[in-house]
Length: 244
Image (cartoon, rainbow, N blue to C red; front, side, top):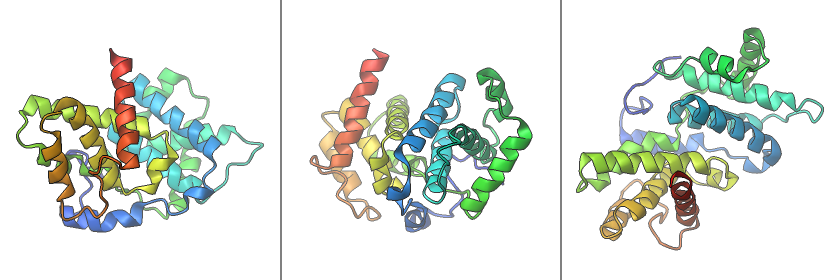
């Protein structure tokens, strides 16, 4: 598996191809996912991302693998430790998609995980089989650069801060299964809009209109009564309280 260093974007050839392909990367059987198993698995991934300063793209990709796996496979009740092994294996697979990512062995040592390399590799194979070896998933991070371009009046430092805030919102929302009901592009745009509402309140209506006019976005993501927007905004507000 190769990696991409281009702003964490998969090599799809063009943005139109990316939008066209994203529907094939949505978890279609959300109802089949065990909420408890997902909550535990996602929490472990996010904890590893925070403790070891892992690339947010890798964490989001690992969670995508977890969701797709859990939509097809059940975790035996008598083997709850498999959730932990699944999280580590999905992190391992995701890290291999980005060469610049911190090696998995580093944070395994830091967190003192009990699974040996052979056990992790076996679980990786099970995940690969469940996912039909389709590892170049499209996630919200695939669209951040594109939607950030709609905020052109802002200065580069502010754009970087905007994207950083949107990234934190995206990570926070990974705990919510509700987000799985939306396309990755919609989640990405909503996260940036939520961050823009905080960073650029005066220019926000213009930003919202610009994003809503995007030819690739069919959902009315910019409407203020959009439930996803409010969900992301609440996570953004929560994050602000944490860092104050």
